[in-house]
Length: 92
Image 1 (tube, helix red, strand yellow):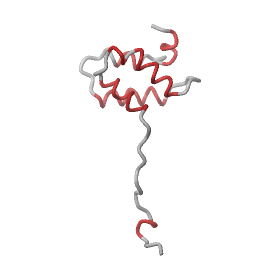
Image 2 (cartoon, rainbow, N blue to C red; image 1 turned 180 degrees about the vertical axis):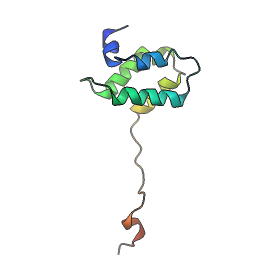
Image 3 (cartoon, helix red, strand yellow; image 1 turned 45 degrees about the horizontal axis):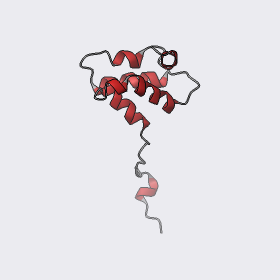
Image 4 (cartoon, rainbow, N blue to C red; image 1 turned 90 degrees about the horizontal axis):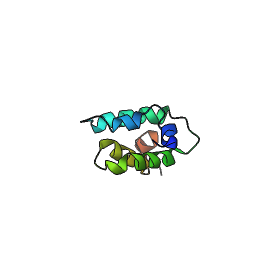
């Protein structure tokens, strides 16, 4: 395995997720979150995700971890107002 990929995925969480037969998307999200929260690397996270996708996702495009990592690269959707005082009080 590439040394850079080994440095990005030190604990092998992403690598090992691709080896688990029948792994579900929910489990992949949990594994990815664990990787993302405890990841320590100077390279920006989107770049690391792209490298991991190239290393593992290219040979398994239908794997749930591939989908999870692709989703992580998408820009967050802006949510609408969720309420609060200004939502209840009419501003004139």
